[in-house]
Image 1: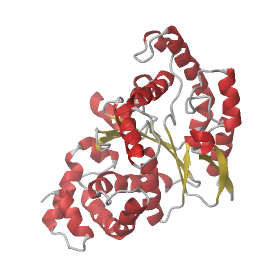
Image 2: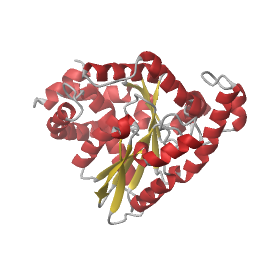
Image 3: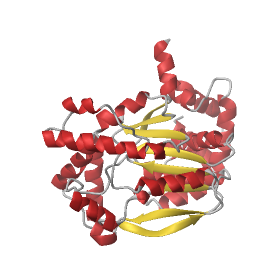
Image 4: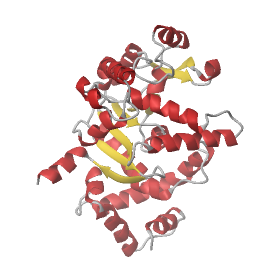
Length: 355
């Protein structure tokens, strides 16, 4: 019997045979990196499966409604819930458990990797586990429209919001420090992307009290500066002398963000098997928007837009090396359908390679 059918039977109220549970345990242990990511061993797997089955059945009806009503999906994908969302939520809860303060959980992911969706789903599951969650996006830390307009007038290379230099780092640092220190009340900045014809601007802040876990996501959360000499032989679309200077300047701007990253307790990286998938995913998203009657970019505009961000912080230079970085707690590699194909801890992979 396939795992999907076993899980479907279970959430529909059927009891599972010992053979079915053994199949779930075997599947969980099949990929060693995957098993180590969740710290699952042959000695603990059966207890883990039993506990997660109980949680799965209790949360599935509400989570299915959330997926339909809030995410616009036809249903809640059981395989994804079982293989990623559920164990990841439990892992984050475990990371929080020994702390005497809120956990600041960083989520790094480029365009189309699903970081915002992941944060939304994790918020729901962690809520079922009795944990109070605050979601914060790097986008929420953008400078005001007026400040970004002044920045663009000073430096015309800031064509779009997004790259290093377009965020209010001091604001972000203040917010994260208040959250880390368990301040009784924290004002969380929020950003309205639709303001000023899509240029975006600050909107009303959200008041947060009594937080256990902060999910802080963004396209370069946790990314640190690299050796400037790297740009002497950078990959496309960093082609011209001006491109290389822009890349170097953005790299230097990253230094301003390091105090923000030092507030992170843990860091998860979402990464496609080929970073160019982000371009494909963005085109698909724009096409979907047009089908709903909203305006969207054509393919050429998407190429120009995505290339701009690759020129600022090229994934091969900044993100790929992080897949082996011990400062990263978990890597989730995604296929063309946005589904996880590898889940691993960089420190465990390095240990395997050294043995």
